[in-house]
Image (cartoon, rainbow, N blue to C red; front, side, top):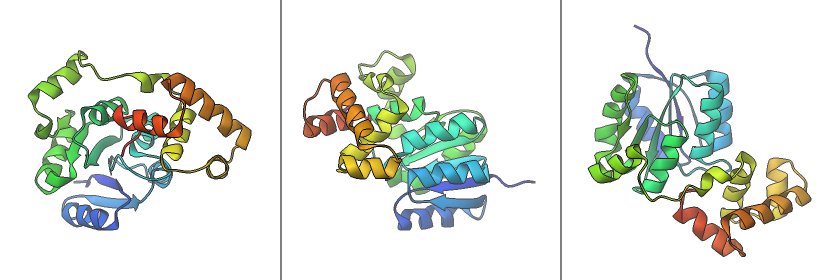
Length: 213
């Protein structure tokens, strides 16, 4: 029987090694990446059956990486392995196309269960969130802010780099854009989110789960 092909994404080497060691007996680990952009590139090249990824990764966070992977590989499953017990992040993960959300603190016990659940075509969410939170998310009746839907892909990408503390020139170099283009997007971000300083921009982005901590 053909083994499930799994790609891993996390910026912590010890966590990657631990996940690899626990999954290798049952699955084929086709690769791993330590930043979101490399993960997307690896997924497009390797075409895995399943991607297990962290939400917080440099250059391109896991949420944006997941969206890009799903756009080119819609049949590939996605399971987030995260330290965040925050409904805003869970909601963003589900919107990004995730079929599973597991806490790193419970990964040893839950990851295998999450994988088997996803393989059945179902969604696995760690019970740590509680039934009420999960019910509200699925019922679309929660009070979480949906401002992230107003941001373009490029704006979300620049938002992450701003939150990482990078200046306009560095962001322009990373994204291969002009400084004027970065300045334009920065101004539009502040206008859309109703803030006036980078500190306010960072605070609201983290509070609303637009960018992982």
